[in-house]
Image 1 (tube, helix red, strand yellow):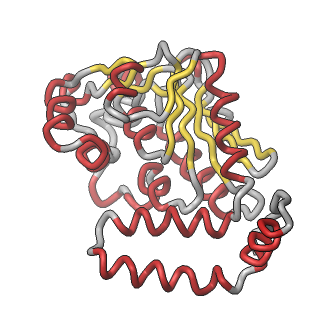
Image 2 (cartoon, helix red, strand yellow):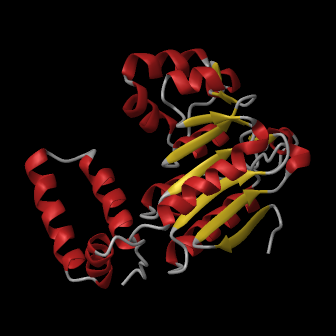
Length: 263
């Protein structure tokens, strides 16, 4: 098992940490595989209600490992094989997008290229005040390969997304907050604590309801209102039969905190 991505579960929160600080957490081929495996693991673990994705050191993720690529190794190198040999269903951005469990990006430092796309693929982002998002794809002769061209227009509109992508612009934390690309900006030393605080607040709620809400929000981005209403109704039916629904009603009437079991 690689130590380049670590995994820890506590109080219903799974923390996945990119752990390659000497390389600013740039992504290697083995890291891609390990990150996918751990995201799937967290998604399948009934004890996990929320996922936090973060990094060690001064960067969240500085993108793909271009140093290795320049040496003819790994992702983006001339020796790498693409096309039919890559199963895009099993890449981290695709797996991340398919997760029903909420994912919080704790941006301990800057995110560039692939790292930026990875952060945008999360549901909530808490960013260090000194950190930046660098959409430097076109400056390297590539394009946002891991979801950026899908996320950015939906998040901030076509014109602003076009400006950022076409110029390869680097955004400060203040810029990101202004454009609503992140939820909060806090001092670097508070990022992990704030992300965990949010994760625990979410984890205290009924997990099937939270996951159902995320699933429907994702579906709603592509549906008409009438179709979406039908899907909402179908999702509600099993929730009405759940123990958590009864617990939610009882706790409200009894004026006490709910104890949800995910059943």
